[in-house]
Image (cartoon, rainbow, N blue to C red):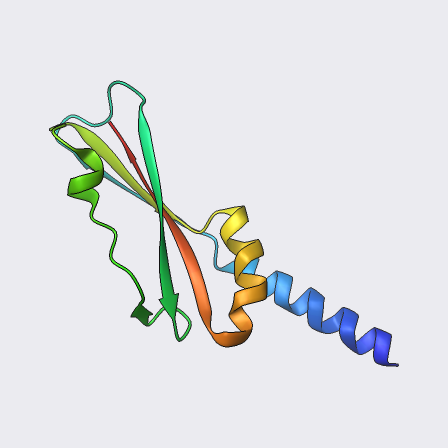
Length: 98
């Protein structure tokens, strides 16, 4: 009985985190041209309500005037969130492609 309960909880957790997958893309100027990208993690507490750190996309883009910003919950973020979600901490990946 205990093994079934643990299996159901793990399956529910996997489904819960997979439902939250999404990607947002923002094009600045004409968009990415060179394909060079920089990634940083944005951390949230209380299931995404309060940010723990600040990701500065302008600093990540440097002097580029044309770039693409992509924010997503990647597969790695989901795996990390399965462990840190217990204390309501979740990551999100921010990627700037120049």
